Amino acid sequence: MEQVIMRPIGVIHSPYKEARNMPIQGTFDDRVEAWLELKEEYAEGLKDLDAFSHAIIIYYFHRSPREETAGRPFLEEQKHGIFAIRSPHRPNHIGLSVIKIKRIKANRVYFTEVDVLDGTPLLDIKPYVSYFDSREEVISGWVEKHFKDGEIPDKTVIP
Picture 1 (tube, rainbow, N blue to C red):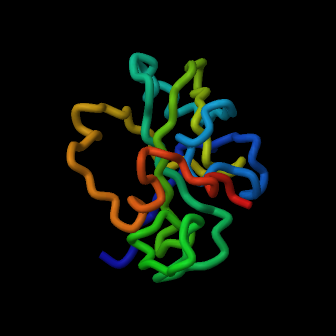
Picture 2 (cartoon, one colour; picture 1 turned 120 degrees about the vertical axis):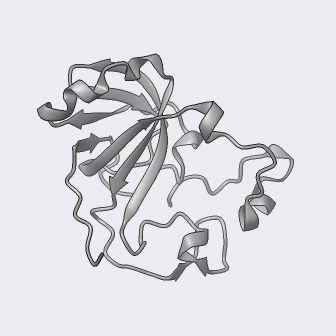
């Protein structure tokens, strides 16, 4: 298979027009609300999603200007391989976030824990199911040293 073609199912609306001042991960700030707007033909797919507190959204980093095989994450001075970091400059520019659902109305899902730019193409939504999506005894590689004693580091917002 040489090529995979994906069609956006909607668009993500957020207050972040630029990456500056956006959290590096949505879990660091639950005060900002955003919404997903699905194309009308996919609105029926939202049935029963309101029974879940969280969802996983998959999207396309449409404003990523380049593709890299390594990069320097915000928490580090050292470069790491692209598959060991969460940079948008990935080979396929695919992003994934866990969001906290606030409410659903028609073809819109309102949510917090936002870390996505306004206008980002939405590719898919899946319910977050703790029984499937949480793991015990997780090792988080180079990230572990930045969260010692459960403290959140200062660099949680894009400068």
